[in-house]
Length: 78
Image 1: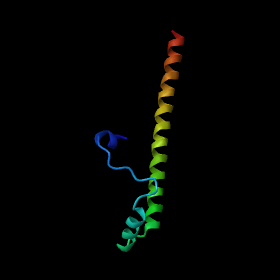
Image 2 (image 1 turned 30 degrees about the horizontal axis):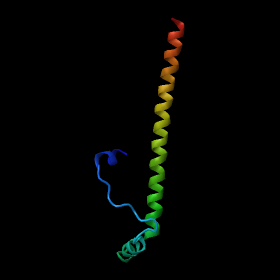
Image 3 (image 1 turned 90 degrees about the vertical axis):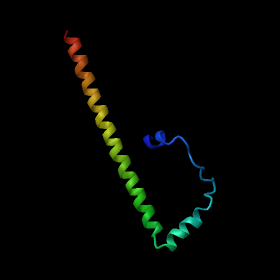
Image 4 (image 1 turned 30 degrees about the vertical axis):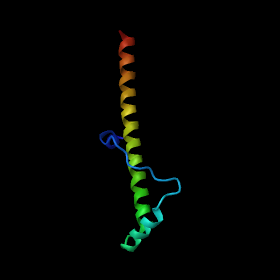
């Protein structure tokens, strides 16, 4: 989202039918790229990145919740 915010113009959207994706993937294969291995790697990296972000978010929420609980406890004691 941060990257999107800094780039205000979006390129063309991928057509519903995938456009020329088969041609592009064939070009990758011809260049010696294992497209299936690349897809698996990108999926794994994406999943790992999501899990890290999720865990970071849960840590922040937990910390803020504990801070609020402490604040409520202190205010109730006054």
